[in-house]
Amino acid sequence: METIRNYLESMFANLPNTPEVMCAKNELLSMMEDKFTELISEGKPQNEAVGIVISEFGNLEELAESLGIESVVGGAEISERRLLTNEEARNYIYDAAQSRMLIGLGVMLIIFSPIFPIILNDIGAALLFIDVSVGVGLIVWANIRMSQWKFLDNTLCCIDYSTAEYVYTAKKNNMMSKALMLTIGIMFCIVSVVPVIIFEGLFSAKDYYYVIVGPAMLFVIVGIGVLLIIASGAKDSAYAKLLSLNGTGTVAGNYEAVRATKEPYTDKKKAAEVMSVYWRTVTCIYIIWSFISFDWHITWIIWPLAAVFNGIMKSLFNTKW
Image (cartoon, rainbow, N blue to C red; front, top):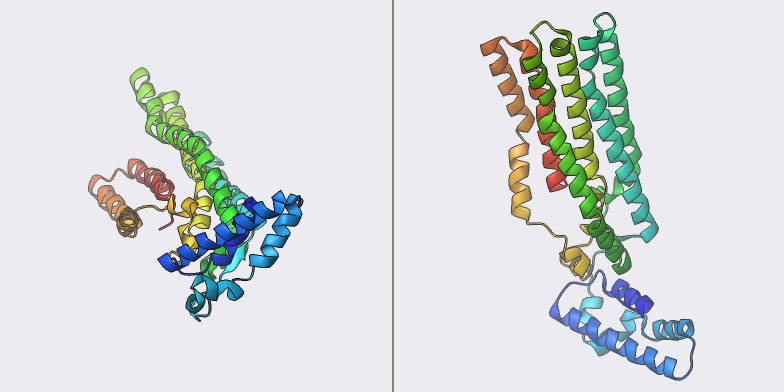
């Protein structure tokens, strides 16, 4: 029966989500179930019974008149969407997760970069640029890796009922690990200043631990925290993307798995409006703070902290600004 249900959902997927269409779908499902039960009672094997039911009820154009949806099926406004197979959906989730991890590693390396000038005076600057170049390279590689999936943004696509159920189940199973990684990542970012505070209380201002080890540990802890924050939403962003493919006005756009994952649009819109000027605001604060205080050796800390907050917002809203 699951095969019959999936086939029925694919038949109605791109039809408008109206009471008439839903009534017709339920009526056809009842007819298919009755026929399947009848064939099984006659001793037909299950696979053969499924094949007979699909061959008899599988052409919606032939059944449209009897179901009362002839005008809908024959209409020209039904949008054709590229069907994303279950295998393609799995591959997209895998690639998205791997790319998100590469981006996280790249950002972590960039945050690590100031450690080298702090620890190694002579070659620290050279290692800083090498570290940044590797980090940027990982981010570029991640974007190139995802270029094969650009059609999801440029082409009308959809997923069938079974794929939507699979993605929704995977999304629910991933919630705990996402929450754990996000929580630990935020905790790392918060406690990153603890070594500096401890060494400030234990050692003098010129001591090795206060001047070098404390700041270096700060960047290490922040970098790991940011990596965890970015990685926490690796799969979740892919799930959200796949479940948003189906047209909202179609039957496929109102699968239970799709409806259950829809987020309030207003919150995301407000966040997008705020974050659209985020980096400009950070830059203004940095310049004003630096020129007023002339503490250039301190004010740079605003950049890693701003990157942490930006990563948290992206993970919370599963989007990019």
